[in-house]
Image 1 (cartoon, rainbow, N blue to C red):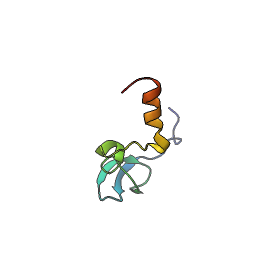
Image 2: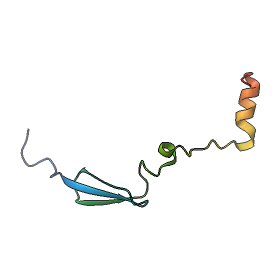
Image 3: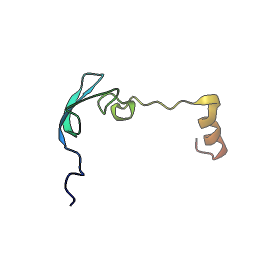
Image 4: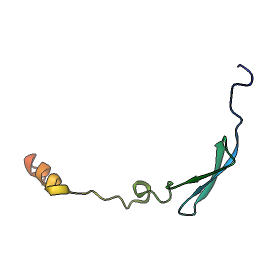
Length: 66
């Protein structure tokens, strides 16, 4: 490998807006994020399907999936 072309990796403390913190490797010692796996709707199970104008019902009716 070539010398002096790779960034220096340090332990990085990541803090989410929900209060969750974890440690990973990064170029900066601290990082603030807005959303993490503890508060994201996909990972928490609070994800909802938005049925705009009955599109899901129309699809089920068209393909007889009732």
